[in-house]
Length: 275
Ligand code: ATR
Image 1 (cartoon, rainbow, N blue to C red):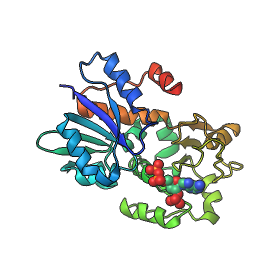
Image 2 (image 1 turned 45 degrees about the horizontal axis):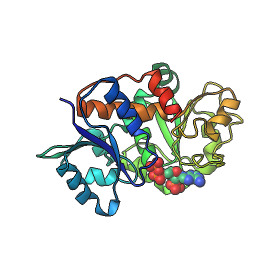
Image 3 (image 1 turned 90 degrees about the vertical axis):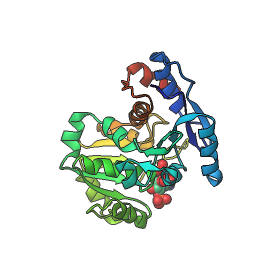
């Protein structure tokens, strides 16, 4: 049976596209449940607010920044991936207990073409820019896909902590070796927030000598083509933004709550591109 009341929580939450995605599926499938909402939850009173939402009958909550670690901490049971990432983006609330899951890593994997995985990731050098919450899921996923993952972050210590937390046998890329490592990588992904604000330019990498077969991914989906992707595209490289991952992680949450597997349609992609 489908879960009646679902929502995304975050702080702030105004710009979330998750309601557009979930409500598209709820409508398309004709589910007789409440529309998916977005709710602002202040981290300082997190547990209290979750209990209130539970009492109000919410059965499924997506969790976004900066609440994913708090969601992990209040979960009675967590999935293996959540434990590894110490982060929860999908809560299932029932009378007896709170289950925590994380669909970011699998959402990222599902956003990739099989061909890209084979050609650019498995047994290949991959480079992750950034060491924040989203980098964690991406590094975990690339490692699961058999990629040799290294990461570069302007704060090197954070990159080391991430690698240690995930028990990865890798090392942060130092600023002086970044160019060489990037030039020998088959897959490069930006997980930093640089390029999200209007007029902001991501110049972490020089694209001058990047191999022509290298796949360039940016988790940023608004703007649709970040400055990072623009530079890559100008060099004729294959590019992808974060929209597909956003939809795929939502599809996994949808399946957890409603036990229905949904397809990512072109109609939904264009709906979001114009949202
Ligand atoms: P998210 O949850 O979206 O990953 P986050 O945890 O705040 O967000 O992480 C943001 C990432 O973007 C970090 O790796 C951050 O680098 P620091 O760890 O050095 O802070 C990176 N980042 C943000 N602004 C940046 C900038 N102007 N230049 C380079 N990296 C930046």
